[in-house]
Image 1 (spheres, rainbow, N blue to C red):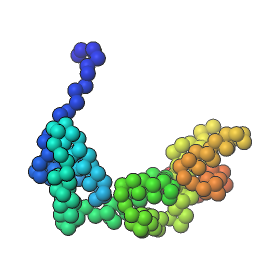
Image 2 (cartoon, rainbow, N blue to C red):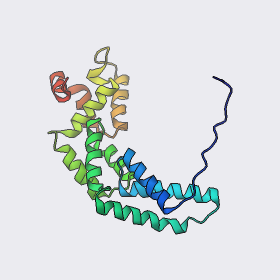
Image 3 (cartoon, rainbow, N blue to C red):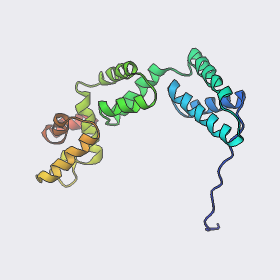
Image 4 (cartoon, rainbow, N blue to C red):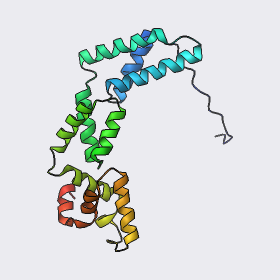
Length: 193
């Protein structure tokens, strides 16, 4: 194989048509779960890139996106509530804080009410979902009681470990409990290990 630096050629965007947008939307939905606002953003980006390249106005194609999204909502291909619930549960199991989940779902174009509903449902799985998520995050990062070299007594290192959880969106109290106060047996039960 030739190891010379090869310039990567940019893919030429196809000309926008109703059929092309439909195919692009279906292909995207086959690969990713999406909210209606996120799919709208993806399709509008495609339109803008294509229209800019082919020097065509983008305005006539915007109503096509709205029609597609309306149709997909009607037939059930797009459902913001179920998307929000599934995404919130996945993120919670991954050790994300309430604040981080709220931010990620807001970026996807979901309303505050939808996000709060999804978080409420995701938090029903555990008595203290925020603490459990903080413990999972600490275990992933191998900090606090999950350090491989044992619990540290160095105050500077403890501050750094607390800062890791603070940057992840956890409160000081939750971070302190997750890192230093809880019993290891409780952690093992919470994680099934």
